[in-house]
Length: 95
Image (tube, rainbow, N blue to C red; front, side, top):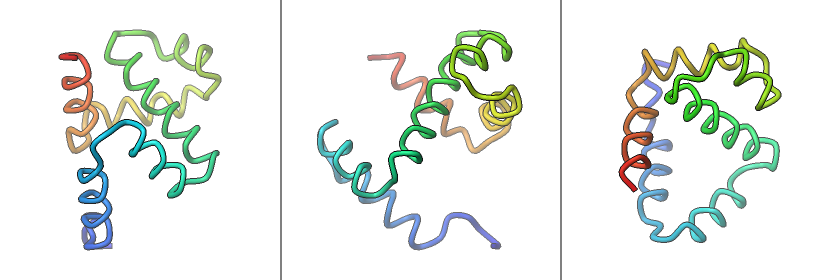
C-alpha cells in the first residue's frame, strides 16, 4: 500500500466527523466493529492515556492485562506516529 490514507478510510473519517453525540458514535462503532475490536480499541486508548501520565510499561501491562510488547507498540505510535494520539489526548485533557 503506497498510502494508508485511502479514499475508503477518508470516507470513514468523514462519517466519524458527521456524528454529533457520544451515543451516535457509540452506535456507529458497534455497527462497524466486532466486540473484540471495540475492546482492543478501548484498551489501546486506555494505554495511551496511562503512557501520557507517565505510568511504567510494566504497571500498564499488569493493569490492562496486555503484554508489554503491546504497551511498547502503542508507546512507539504515541511518540513517532502521525500525532493522532497526541491530538486526542490534548483535546480530552482540555475538557
